[in-house]
Length: 432
Image (spheres, rainbow, N blue to C red):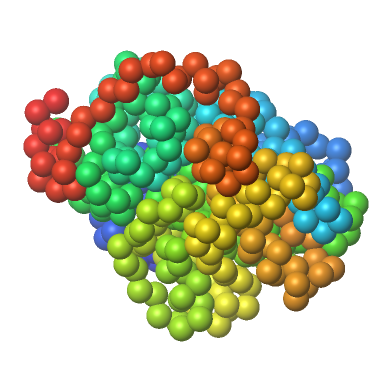
């Protein structure tokens, strides 16, 4: 399997180059040259397959030629060793819980798979690897956990100061060892722009062997497609028209769902649920993609004003606005609506939902008003305990904090505070 750039479809690189380099020099994003349909044998056995078996078969279709089957199976078994259960709210509305991994966020799937895959791809390399990653919330913690003390790999995480929850911040600033956190006085978009610029900086690339663990890296998207299949497996007997409602920021999660659909997963439609950072809903209304500075919200992981994966989405839809509009619905909601919904879900279903899930619940409800017979699956991307302040403000009750999060409370935060200025960031890196 080869990979091309969204800016140059004639460019072809192998898996190792796509994963380790992260970004093509033309500033596009890598995409697989072919997304193969899963065969009849897969679907005949599908209902009885384990989650790991599903993940292996899906990943084999995308990267098998670059990774021997026995090695790929080992990567999957180490990375996907927790489930993604479906919780049924009512007859046609469900939540796919993606927060049962070590950092209680969906990004554990991508980060753990990527860590194991990178270790395999670089096992014979002598030069150490430096992972540079921007986070709007959960990516940082998942990457820090996935790569913690990985031999020959150091991790540098940029996050927006004051724009991640306290527990999210502790997850990425308290590990130490090979993990360094850079607290940037700006928004996530500033962090993301600095990371992208670093990959194109000759001085930094001479000093470090840089790669990314953001969803700009194709190795993050491949494992995020796994749980769409797992959701369908759990709901297959309902025989309804399956719709996925995705809390969306950088749009990597939704892009992974589109890849699953291209592989043959019978998905009727996707719903992009956003907060006030509503660049994509506005695009679907007007046909004009107009990035803008992000604004801070209680659903902070979605605070992205220029989503990187939009170019991949465009590529999958043939850069056809009408095609995308026909397949994708998008809604945006504000903080007041989000907080009110956390309480509504608690009162109505006895279920505690996090702020990102609350935005998706609002979008799902709106969609179901017009499509009452569809089966809508909300992606529950993070455990509510990661946002205790928002949950308590909304419902009056703090969520129960799992022990693995509670133990972070007393740990000392260690971060490097920098302005949202690329040169200052570069100078700091060059001095390390």
